[in-house]
Length: 366
Image 1 (cartoon, rainbow, N blue to C red):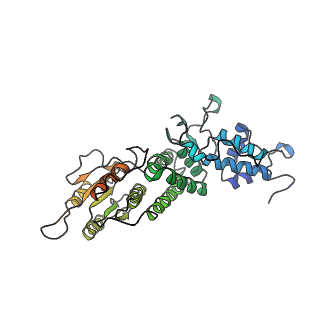
Image 2 (image 1 turned 90 degrees about the horizontal axis):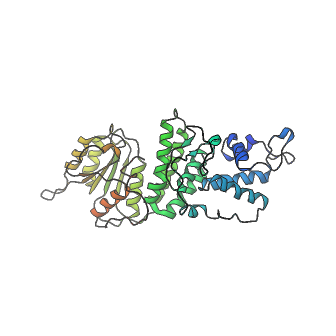
Image 3 (image 1 turned 180 degrees about the vertical axis):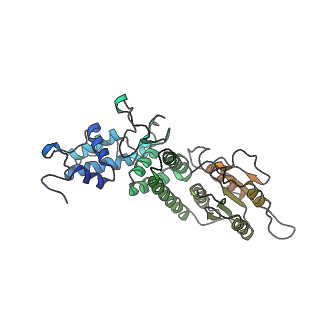
């Protein structure tokens, strides 16, 4: 309910937007995006038009538009609601050709939004207040802002738009994975802050990947499946989910077994399904089980005289530092893993998307 005479307080507005009151006040000071009127004692009171302006500000920054540009567009929206905002009609598409932000900029948390503008000495972000993204697409920065605000609808829409615009491989390598890495590094260095951000972001990325897998074409290959599993004690599944979605997108058969598969269960799954390949994910050296990988690579099945063994893909940074054993390969990323598996099924390399980096997908953390 609005007080038609005075509007709502900054605290009430912040709760409505899902940001901190400090962020609202900071936007007012830095970008002149405050309330049109002031209450008694110069306290900020926000009218319905002011609230709509701040909602537009949040929507644009979540789409990757720099805060200063978003504020200008939001102010135009308040002064002339029917006038189109120049340059922000399709922020996700425009961001694809925008220059990449400098390495030393960070996606700030709720207390500060300083992503696109060089910080003067008096306005430099407080150490530890941002997510360490580095050189990334602008959509990645928008996704990080939305996740930090716990803006679930914006996160979901940004992921949907990225997959539609760039496809699975590029979306994973250049938008999803860098944001996940940044949140994880922030969590590790800030006494368990941002845990809720990582959980929300991971859940929505998992949901987007599974939707992509379900919406793929029907399985066209009649060959044996590819088995995807995390090694025992390994809980990180998102990179495997990205690979499963990529295989589904190509109509290739898979069996996903998920996190921390016990060695006995993995052995039973391999023997029962007779896979063409087994992808074993390990996030860290402490979980990489080289003896298990060698055992799987030596597992034979089929009729006497025509027995065969699966190709084992050692996926993830946990396998680095050791020479792959016979019958195993170590792909450097999602793109290479998809190419290796596609060739097993006679599908060429199966990767036609533009963009993307060879490092940082199935071959790196997620």
